[in-house]
Length: 415
Image (cartoon, rainbow, N blue to C red; front, top):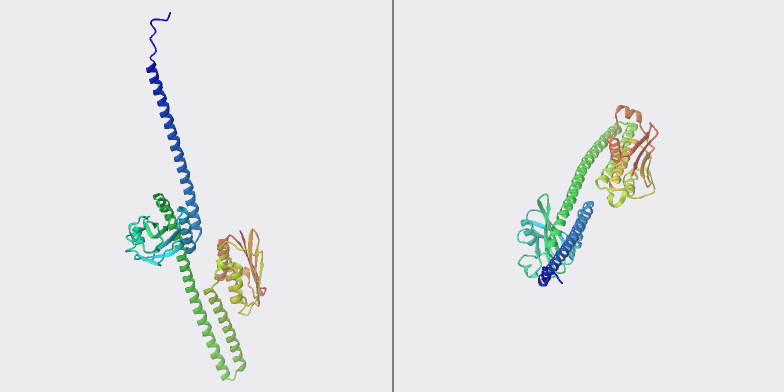
């Protein structure tokens, strides 16, 4: 017989508890699924941000490696379009506080003006407020005074270019399919800061180069003036002395003065050719060390009556900084040959290998006593300059010379 004290099972209550358990399990499963989805979203966002950061890093390195302003501006416009899928771009830079000049434009549509006033233009509004402007409705363009673009403009994003807390210009990107988004504003704001640094770096580089060129031209102009003045003064003295000797019937003395006059005139012409060549040197970066040295020998030494020989082995381009120093070393050595060696022949030899480059300048002139120069601390500014540049290159400088034995200068640089 069943135990009469056993309570009957409450089936409805048991079912209710089971339903509650199942609901709790479903809620937990849904929460776990939502958490997994959220984690996946966060992981995807993290990956996107990491990829974006790496991309910005590569872009910045690429931009800063370029030192020519035009190349930097072209890269800025190209990268700006590629980052967010725009079809056109432009960089406008402040030329003063009143005007923005369109320095570069790329893609379609293109900006149609060369410069814009800061007052009364959308780009000027970006400068004044220091904030991006996003327009996806062409109906608003006239109201916003977007008159630097043609009629087929459909969307525009304009961003300030900040450097050291100040604005140097504006970056425009245009016509993205579907219009620009707030995410585009965020991405392009980061890029615009990097672009501004690269643009300012290139501008400062250009200003430094222009200043260096100006200072060099002023120095050469002073040397040209001093050289010509001294030569003309000497020519005048010899001419007067020759005239007086002829008047006194001293023909041999007069002939000597005329010979000195002729030599002084030749030296003056040589100095002028040298200085004029330095005032208008070839572009080393574009033409390379070999071409520039060939031009120098033809423009100065050949025309001065020196017999020249130029030999090159294993020709190749070197980093521009090394080529610049080697060019100036060769130029100083050739200047010394022309001014002091009284040589008839000069040889320039360039020997390139995979690991080094060697420059030799050899003349058959009067030479000099190396020991005397070293012990007395003498030597021209040209020799000191050669030694300093060689040291800066981490190279080795060798001089071989002696009275009446000519001179051989060797500079060897390990790459």
